Amino acid sequence: MARAIFALCYLALFCTRQALALLSQDLLDVVSANLGPSSLVDQITEVSEAIDKATEKITDSLVPTTAQRAVTSCLIINLIFNPNVYTESSPNYTDNEDINWSQTCRLPAACFIHPQSTVEVAVVLKVITATGAKFSIRGGGHNPNPGFASVDGLGVLLDLQDMKLMSIDADGTLHAGPGHRWIDLYEFSEANNRTVKGGRTIDVGIPGFLLGGGMPFFPTLHGLGADSVRNYEIVLSNSTVVNASHDQNPELFRALKGGGSNFGIVTRFDIQTYPLIRAQYVVNLYNSSDYINIFQATMKVQKSMELDPRIDLYVTVTPTVVVVGMFYANWVAQPPTAFDPFYQLESLVGAMVPLTNGTVTSLAVDLGANTPQYDARRIPTAVTTTGDVGLYIRNHEQFLKSLDITEATFAANLSYTIQPVASATVRVGNARRGNSLGLDSIPQIWWSMVVEWADKKNDLQAQRTLNTLDDNLRSIAKSRGELISYQFMNDASFMQTVLDSYGSDNLARLRSVAAHYDPTAVFQELQNDGFLLRKI
Ligand SMILES: Cc1cc2nc3c(=O)[nH]c(=O)nc-3n(C[C@H](O)[C@H](O)[C@H](O)COP(=O)(O)OP(=O)(O)OC[C@H]3O[C@@H](n4cnc5c(N)ncnc54)[C@H](O)[C@@H]3O)c2cc1C
Ligand SMILES: *[C@@H]1O[C@H](CO)[C@@H](O)[C@H](O)[C@H]1NC(C)=O
Ligand SMILES: *[C@@H]1O[C@H](CO)[C@@H](O)[C@H](O)[C@H]1NC(C)=O
Ligand SMILES: *[C@@H]1O[C@H](CO)[C@@H](O)[C@H](O)[C@H]1NC(C)=O
Ligand SMILES: *[C@@H]1O[C@H](CO)[C@@H](O)[C@H](O)[C@H]1NC(C)=O
Ligand SMILES: *[C@@H]1O[C@H](CO)[C@@H](O)[C@H](O)[C@H]1NC(C)=O
Ligand SMILES: *[C@@H]1O[C@H](CO)[C@@H](O)[C@H](O)[C@H]1NC(C)=O
Ligand SMILES: *[C@@H]1O[C@H](CO)[C@@H](O)[C@H](O)[C@H]1NC(C)=O
Ligand SMILES: CC(=O)N[C@H]1CO[C@H](CO)[C@@H](O)[C@@H]1O
Image 1 (tube, protein in one colour):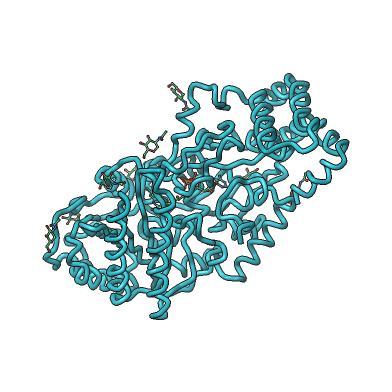
Image 2 (cartoon, helix red, strand yellow):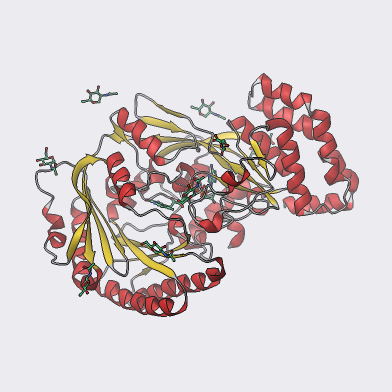
């Protein structure tokens, strides 16, 4: 639709000229509609002539190129928001490129923009929509899919890292800006004797995690990350700011719980916290050759998760060792007997994290401190199944075959994680007015498979390997009647169609919310990439 309007305007040059000639006035309108500070009004007024002159770069060309749109956007935004805009000539430009977990995402945007407030986001978005520039939004930059929270030199990147806000109400509602990483929220909540449901790695960003559903520690206790969000403050495509909660814009509220970046730019999350969780945890390493016994133990703990919501488990399988995180939401004299199947295994080779009484913060910190950190190109894929030892064994046998083939062709690390999700996790979400994910309340496994490699020339090979791992698990599960269509956005690759996996009813609701709140399809057409409705 946005493109259609631009196309019409190419034909009638006058139309474009008229739309853009008013840009500086439009920007002032955005500031006043959002009660922005007078300093911002002054700043725009001061450079209004330059803004309107800059737009000539677009109005003067019959068919502006993608590059012209990006450059013009950057130029106008720089006029207003310097020094929070970084272009190729800025000394900090490469720092901006490198804020990403996977090397594949370190892309050279035409400019990196760091808005300082919601009204600045609204102004920047107005410039982007007026120039028709391609853009991406970045929170913590942990999504490993290239082009999602990164963009090449033909687009602009909105980096929300400076939008840090943290406060907590007497009722335990935490207000958080999108610029935080989970460690900030963990520490702040715990200083207030509360626990927030966030990522299991301290430097994962708040916005991407929550918009994708969010797998926290102890998911059986209070549901997924998104299920604890009470309100989103969001900038819509026409630069209007609204709240989405179960009282205001309830359909948008539901859509944002798992629907990703299809509806707007979230500028604040209001999150329910819980009385402080005392976490007892251990992370053990087992010899991978003992996989049959390890999977039997896994299945037994999964069954216990249905009975005791304080149990949390993850199992990461690598070619040499299996990493088993066993967490319990209470300090108990002895680890619960539910974990005995693992304690009884003879293949224990050591502890990555020894048995500790701590909190979710210390757990996340200890996990990070003991996980090897190194730069790599990485890509994950998400598969969901019901749980069954036979499936785990058959899948592992295929994994070993893929490993052999890969070893003979290129240097890569393959691994996968079994994340058990108890039926109660889904019930919590449903009780909180639902989310977009389309999950059934049954015990299930969210698999995350990862390929990691170093050399850019192996990108395609890595993708093929990942697809093989994904296909194998899917076909084994399907043949056993154990495949669930759901794909967990936070662990999914760009090759997957996540929103489609939520089921046709949910997809239809997401489409209708997008049509209502983004009638000109800015987030579909101008946004560079993502788990977008346009791709389905
Ligand atoms: C080491 C590691 C550990 C992880 N652990 C977990 C875990 O325990 N549980 C879990 O669920 N996931 C986990 N993940 C996955 C992680 O949650 C996702 O990759 C998530 O997208 C990261 O959030 P971010 O803000 O860092 O993302 P970004 O990469 O910044 O953004 C992700 C997506 O969200 C969009 N976006 C970002 N901010 C906004 C906004 N304000 N408004 C609208 N759209 C926005 C981006 O455009 C992009 O499409 C992990 C990832 C890594 C690399
Ligand atoms: C820019 O570089 C300076 C000096 O190296 C550093 O202090 C600052 O944090 C950097 N800013 C960003 C946004 O990377
Ligand atoms: C948190 O709890 C401890 C122990 O009960 C108490 O001493 C402390 O004052 C509490 N802190 C806050 C911020 O409520
Ligand atoms: C959103 O809700 C907050 C808190 O209730 C309120 O202060 C703010 O004005 C609301 N914003 C809009 C745009 O309605
Ligand atoms: C795992 O067991 C195999 C034999 O089954 C042995 O060769 C290997 O060294 C063991 N690995 C570790 C990490 O203990
Ligand atoms: C954890 O706390 C419990 C209860 O206070 C105690 O009995 C147990 O020994 C502690 N465990 C560890 C590993 O510190
Ligand atoms: C594989 O993992 C090891 C650490 O376990 C790391 O040192 C190595 O660089 C990785 N290899 C690739 C190709 O990423
Ligand atoms: C902005 O978009 C929203 C959602 O489509 C709509 O309700 C609102 O009226 C629009 N505001 C303006 C100023 O056009
Ligand atoms: C700027 C920044 O955060 N860069 C990081 C990108 O990711 C690698 C790997 O985790 C880190 O080493 C960099 O510091």
